[in-house]
Every structure is written in structure tokens, then in C-alpha cells.
Length: 365
Image (cartoon, rainbow, N blue to C red):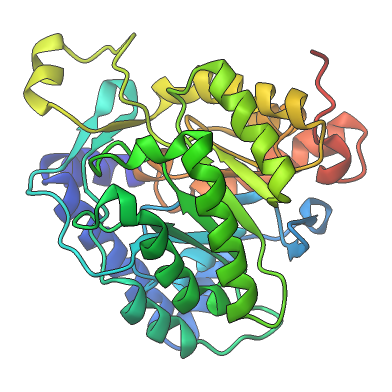
């Protein structure tokens, strides 16, 4: 049904407008008394065997929604209603910003991929923090990760202060915090992945989070798939040295290799980060390298090209404590998480493992 709707309606719309329309209907459904519970029963069946603990958090399952879909934390309950086991919002910057000029989101349907150059369009950390502060936490409240980035107009030399400002505002409302230094759509941002710069930045963010909260908020860094293997090793070593809680692998890529889309169309689209199926192989390679380097001492969240339960299960066996998706959600629609949960349940039972955590990192090298 969704594929028919996608081909007849969404595929013909500007991708960003289609996103806003679809997200509106998700939020609307979650706001109608009784409807949210009904939709959850249909789309988010819970298998207790999938429950897992990571980052000190008890989760109904290992599969979450990656950052970028809900930039301002306006639809957390609706996204949880669809079956995501946790929701990562953002990227949120110190100051509000409109992002890059439109059009800035493009579909590569044959490749099951997206190219975006959104540019961290968001309402800013002060406004998002105020919104999150109004949420009443209960035992059924979704786990929320908060992804923060650099304001575009802030000089690279002042990036740490910008991240610290967002941390001071948002840490108290985050179940975990992610420092994003790997988007290709903010000038100079990826320069911050250099260990000599990233280490002090993360240290200051860690200190700011500890001062802003009365409890330990897990801190992770999100890295690019385009890093050289040696740089990945250095970041892993640094994360262990700093006592970071985890790494998210990976963000979008600036690469365009192996696409089915025509070269002319790719050139017409221009710059931006590529996500979706083409990222699958490299994202898995980065995960495997991180797992080997850290030997299970960090929580690893895998994202990039995960479309099926087989993909998610492969990442778990390769060392991912948790997995995330985004691009496949656009192509698969609201029943995607139902299929993912059922598939993961079947693979867990067939494997002989008693839990997701027991399966993590058991693939033979």
C-alpha cells in the first residue's frame, strides 16, 4: 500500500515537502486520543526477547531512528508509535539557522538512496531545550538521543564554545548526547574530526554535560565513512582515552561511487551527503574496524545502508550494540519497523542466542 502511495504521490513531490507532509500525518496521528495506542498495537509489536541495555539505558529493542528526520524534537512520540526503539533528534546547533538554500534534498530511487545538503536547519538549542523540558517522563517515555552540531556562522576556532552552549541547554533533557563533527554540509565541520581538535572539544563537552546534570549523560561522537582507516583508529583510541561512552558509525558520505543513477543527474544534484543503500559496505567496514580496535569497551551504534532485518542482524553480529536507520524509512514507510522487529525476532531465535546483547560482536573475523 505504501509503495503505491510513494509511487503515485510522494515520488512526484519535492522530497523535502513530502517529508514535511508525511511527518505532519505522523504527529497528527500521535495527537489523537486513543489513536496513538491503536497505531502502536498494529505497527510496533513488542517482543520482549529483543529488549536490550546499552549506554546504561533499558530499550525495548536495538533499532532506533537516526538523526535528521526530527530535527527539532517535535514528533518523538509519533515516531516511537511507529516502532522505533529510540529516537535521535537533531542535528541541533547553538543558534537557530535556516540551513542551505532549497532544493537541498534529493532522491536516488533506483539506488534507494538520498542526497542532502540541508545544512543543519533547526530552531536552535534554546528553543529545542524549552520544548524538551515540557515532556513528562514516565516508564513508557521513548529514549531520546540529542545530536548537536556547529552553527554555520560560528568560526571553526570558536566551535567548542558553540557545542558547549548547546550541551549546557540540552544535556539535562537527553538520554544520550551525540557530537556531530561529520556532516559534509557545514563548511569546515569535518576538520573537527582531527584528533588534535576533536579531543579537547569532546573533553569540554563532557565537562559541560556533567555540570549541567546531576547524573551521567552518555556522550558519543558521530564519524564520517570517508575517514582513512588510520584516522578511525586514532578516534577510537581517543574515545577510549577520554572515557567516551560510544561512537556512531557512520554519517553520510561525499563519495558517489557505484551509483545506478546517471552521471548527468548526479552532477546536476551537486554537493551533499549520500545516505542509504550505497553506504552499506563502507559503513560496515568502519564498524568492524571500530569493534576490533575497541574490543567491546565502547558502545557502537551502526547506521548507514541498513534496510532489512538481515542488514541489522549483520551489524549486531559485527559489533553494533544498537542500530539506526533513516533513508530506508523513506522508501519503506510506516510498516518498516514492524517488519524489522519481526525479522530480528526470527533471527535471534534461530541463532540460539538468548538476547541481542549476547549476539553483539560474535561474527568471526
